[in-house]
Each structure stands twice: as structure tokens, then as C-alpha cells.
Length: 213
DNA sequence: CCACAGATTTCCT
DNA sequence: GGAAATCTGTGGT
Image (cartoon, rainbow, N blue to C red; front, side, top):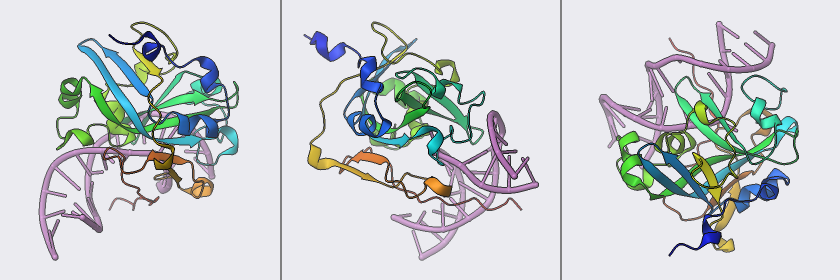
């Protein structure tokens, strides 16, 4: 039997707090994705916090645009953006409304539906790499801009939801600089991960790409 | 294991 | 025009 409490989504008040409180508490939580082919579930092992308009690393830093509109809305909703011309990334909007902060879901372990995830991530050599990185996570769970703005606190067979999960050993929760973030936000230690978990993505310092020849 | 080129949207200068 | 909250395939050690 599945405990009912385990399947109840996180309440909106969970997300309606400062993003630096919410981000580490999302570690261990379960992201549920209902696709046409069946459910996929993932245990979150790595996240990054983006602190709205005060954060030079955030998409909201320069104010509202068509892309980041959802970040300025109510907490507990999905902000999905398209980047580098190829990839999608998934965030949970946090903090008081209009603060435009969010948590990027960077990596996790597939718990249910690994067969479905492998079809989308056919090039992954090992299952631990199915969702090792934010764009891989979105690809594995078939998340794209059609899900931008989805309520993560909805019940039942919602396409996307976040459920509470067994909190990791507090001794294993680490934080450090955010991956790939340059500019004024580079030094903020707002990446959180479960130390030693094989699904956590490698840290890559920010490196501007060289111009194409 | 490592490094690098290439895929090409969105936003800003 | 150029950088960005990225990943993959190729080729080297």
C-alpha cells in the first residue's frame, strides 16, 4: 500500500518562502511526470537557487520578459525555459509573488519509468546519467515549454507535480558555486546537492565559448 | 579519463 | 553581433 501522505503534493506554502530556504529542502523530494505512455518519477539530488531581480545570475535580473513571465507569478508553478537553441530546463517558482525567484532542478535519480526515460535519453550510457544535468533531467521527463506555468501543487493525475520525499542525511547536504554561472552571480554558493550521490552532475566553472571561426 | 567543436533561441547591447 | 542557468559526439592520452 502506498501511504496517502506520500502522494500528496507539497503545499503552496512550501514554495511561498525565500528561495534559499526552499532550495535545500527540495533535495530528496519526488518530481512526478505523467506522460501519455505512463508515469516517470525522479528523486531530486541537485538544485540551484536563483534569487529574482537582485541576482545577476537570474533570468529575472533585467526585469520581466515574455520568457520569464512565469517567474513573476505565484509560487509553486513550473518555469520551463529553452536555451542554447536545443535544451529545456525546469524550475520551481518560489518566494513571495512578484519576487521572481526560482529553483532550477539540476539532477536526480529516476525511481519509476526508467524505461520511458531511456527512450528519450537513448545516448545515456548508464541509468545514473539519465537525469544528470538540468537539460538531461528535462529531456528524460519529457518536459518542454508546453508545461511552462504548470501548477506543481496540483493533485491527482496532473502532468507534473512535486511530492515530499525522504529528506537526505543533513550531513550529506552540501552547497557551493552554481554551475556555469558567470557575471556578478558567479560566486554565490547557491548550488545544493546530496554529497556522494552518483546522479549529481559534475561542477563546471563558467567558461565563455570562443567565437566560431 | 580529458578537451573541444557544434547544435542554434532568447535577450541584450 | 554576441553571450547565455547545456549537452553530445569525436578524438586524444
